[in-house]
Amino acid sequence: MLANLSPVSLMVLGFICCLIFLFIFRKIYTFLSTFFKPFKKGKSYYCRVTAISDGDTLTCHRLNFRRSETKLRFAYVDAPESSQAYGKESAHLIKSMVHKKWVRVKITDIDRYGRCVGVIYRYRKSMNEEMVKRGAAWVYEEYIKDKKYLQYMLSLQDKAKKQKKGLWNSSRPIHPSLYRKQNK
Image 1: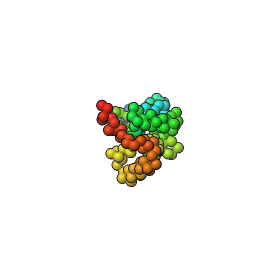
Image 2 (image 1 turned 45 degrees about the vertical axis):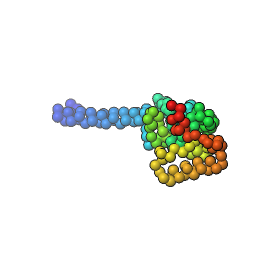
Image 3 (image 1 turned 30 degrees about the vertical axis):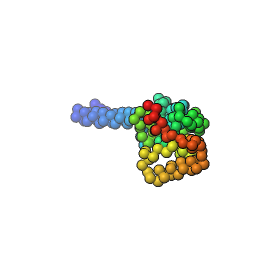
Image 4 (image 1 turned 90 degrees about the vertical axis):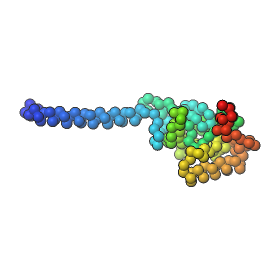
């Protein structure tokens, strides 16, 4: 059948076959590269929490072939450092909520240390909001751009303060950013 075609027709057919092959190869490459990549800003992923560093940092494995291990920082909240007052309790609280469990993570940013920053959900419940609600973390006001969400988070924090939950049970809790500056 191909023997009946002219040399020009064979070249055109070969060129078209090469274009189709390149198109298919590019689609497969794009799919695999996104499938194997760790987290990307603006996307949501499911992962299994494998370790808790402190009240606002955890390590999780994404469900992909490479089993990407990634350090995640909670967006919009700042929990006490491990060596700080209520630091161990804050870490224990988040550990009881998500350790060795499947969570959905919505990546909001990548911080200067290369950690992904995101909102962690367990059964459609934001763990970030839960930490503030239970008095285990401060609201990180500088990073919340949405005014309504900022007001909502501050109202959760104020409610925890009034009820003297968690770190607010102390007479004068020190914000983690001030604590880090003092202990450099």
